Amino acid sequence: LGCLGSTRTHAKRLDRLRAAGTTESQLARIHAPVGLDIGAKTPAEIAVSVLAQVTRVLRQG
Image 1 (spheres, rainbow, N blue to C red):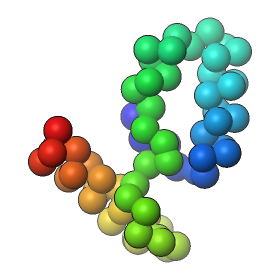
Image 2: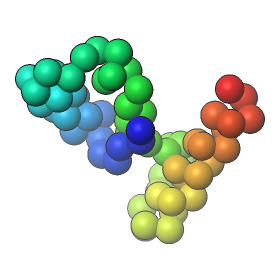
Image 3: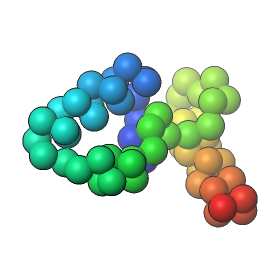
Image 4: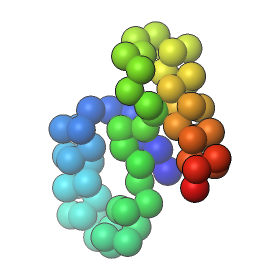
């Protein structure tokens, strides 16, 4: 699962999920912030950065 947002936003997200009873093994499956850091600003650029990360994971494991 990939989630958009800053590192700070992700930390808050994890806190909320822990409070809701989500296990650490479940939390470990979340990739955030999702996408390669290419300085993306527009929705199209963000989509490219996410697909680039997916491609890297598929190719490099």
